[in-house]
Amino acid sequence: MEQQRNGEQPPARHRRPLVGRRRMLTWLAVGTVTALGGGVVLRQSLAGADEPAARPAPGGGSGSPAGHRHGTGAPPPASGSPRPSAPPPPPPPVDQGGRKWSDAGGWGGRLPGPGSAVRITDRVVLDADAKVGSLLVEPTGSLVFAADRSLTLASSGNVEVRGTLALAPDGAHTHVLRFPEVDERRFAGGGMTVVDTDTGLWVTGQGYLRLDGAPAPPGPAPPPR
Image (cartoon, rainbow, N blue to C red; front, top):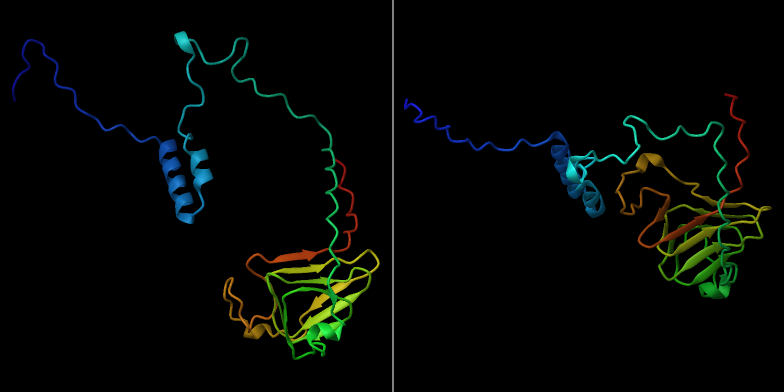
């Protein structure tokens, strides 16, 4: 081994900078969001996670503002019960325009029956109880239950909504959508794909479903603290 000459220092070795735990977690988080898709916003918010919380002030002074003491947090929240949130605004009224379900002329002279595969491409108002074999509301169509009466629509097959389906009765009436012949033992499952054996309500594509229920009764008062 050669000895050092004239007190020369050994050449500095190049060391690979250590990867901080916070930076590594940031990379892992970014990779996860990207793999799941649609993570552009999250990726941007995570990009600065490895930056220090406070940078030193110019001139070597501390980064804290004058008169601030370390370890002094924000004042505690005010005691007492939180203020009740404001009630949500009422939903917009449902457009009741369109031809009447009970008008046979709109169905070519014959009303749909229990075995009918109904396909709606225009605006229809359900004004009487009905039973069908299946129902498809196309993107250009809508089916709105009349708000001023209690109504029941029963279907032995799927009800698929690609357009609009609205059940929004007034306070004195009830709207019901029933599937009386469902056999859950036949359910196969198909994700977002409509399956004939999985009888039920499907809202697909740009479909819009409006369901207005009765106001919930007030719950019990919270126990005193």
